[in-house]
Amino acid sequence: MAGELTEREVLRVAESQYSRGDMEIPFVPAHTAVVVVDMIDEFVRPGWSPFWIPDATRQAPRIRQTIDKARRRGCLVVHLAYDVRPDLQGLNFPRTEFLVPIGSLAEGHDDLFHAVSFWHELTPAPEDVVVLKHCYSGFHQTPLDSVLRNRDIETVAITGTMTNYCCGATAREAFWHGYAVAMVEDCCSTDSAAMQAAEIATLRRGYAKIITAATLLERLASAASGDPTTKEATRQA
Image (cartoon, rainbow, N blue to C red; front, side, top):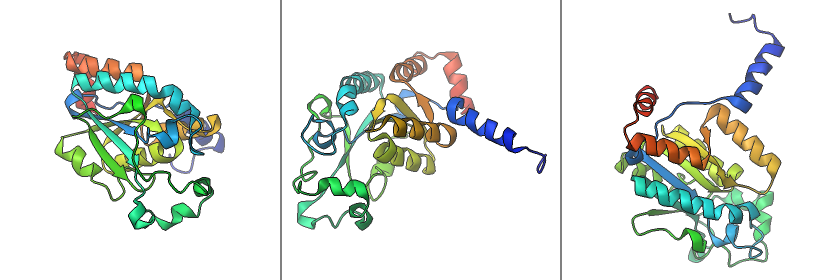
């Protein structure tokens, strides 16, 4: 009853949802897109850029295996990448992105993000879709939503970097656009273990199903084989 809850009780429920909450969403291959966020040289190539995320380099082989298998199952694979148009002098970016502390990492590195260079292990396949973005979210002023809707996508599985910036922002907007969202936890990386855990906890409670690459592929395989359990879960989701 409203007004009869104790502080201890509401905090206990919140903690349970941050740490163990789960949601059921469909993973039908033809209606699932695996989104690879910013696996480009600026974030993945070791020692090359102040934006390098070492865990992204380590996770690249797993992401490669995941998207290869998902693609063979019939999933759409979408690659997102930062694009700073040098001819526009950064005017296609929100001006606030240059004010926050992370933006200072670009000082003295004026050539970063001017040419999209995907990490060699994650070069898009001919049938993949590449969407260039101009801020954290893959949806902001891009055709991503149109691409997904035109392919009848219902579920978006997020991989890439950084978990608490571009991956998290894209996951939130996918949720706001009405897509079922999965965060592939062992295929998402950032530069702080604490921030990785905090972002995953927040997304788990309010935005996404947290899943491993292995479980994602199992769910896709079950749906493709007509597993009745998967069909029922999809119908209910």
